Length: 353
Ligand code: GZL
Image (cartoon, rainbow, N blue to C red; front, side):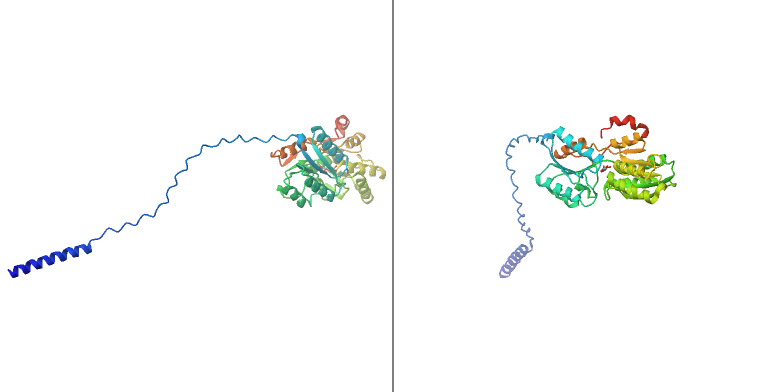
């Protein structure tokens, strides 16, 4: 019995030991990490009924009567320039634009001072006919900083594109090429030419020279004897021509003048020297002013290549567009012809400048 009890006791001990062993090996399911608490999804705020926006009112477009424009003119060196000034003044008056006009008397520093004064007065748009191409960057930058657009009228300026909005004027290179073609015809593609250049550093002087020179390369029997500035004026054109006649005399077969005024001065010099302008010496110039048509009727000037100075309408139209925040073309070109003696008498009465 004792033995039996012992067995029973042993069995009970073993059983309870095995139960205890089972308890330690049982893999408890890993306590689940509490899920990182997701930020409580924000309840979308109940959408407030959209407050009715009042329809944004388009600001009324400006009209010519609202416009205040500054114009920095070069001066009055030529018939062409006077015609341009008259066009600007007359069109401003006609349209009711308030125009602040300044005459720089050929001095760039006066033009710069005028532009600064237009900026100080807070004009809407500034027009400038740059006497020369260089030296405009600082003052154009000042205008840009003040939010005032610059339009180049009739002459270009050597500045980065973003400093002006538009150039209104002619293709001066083409004018030079056209003048050369006329000269080639007049000289039967053979002869010596002298050139009266415009103001040194002025856009039309640089380009008219380049256009003529490149076309001349196509005519091996025509050569440029000499070239000098007559500053776009009649008096200086005459002076330079007198000097050329002293140096080259009757070797000169043709005169190419960058404007009609210098050609008219040269005509006087040739007559005083004792040669016949238009016959002994052929003359081609640029502009197409009335004085040139009169000289062609007289037979002293052979041809003129037109360069339109009546830029007032295009200028104010562009100014109004800019003031209204509209885009304007980078180059507003003029339409121009070439006229010689045969048509001069018929055309003279119709010429507007
Ligand atoms: C051309 C203009 C020139 C004319 C000259 O656009 O700048 O200046 O040809 C004038 O007659 O003085």
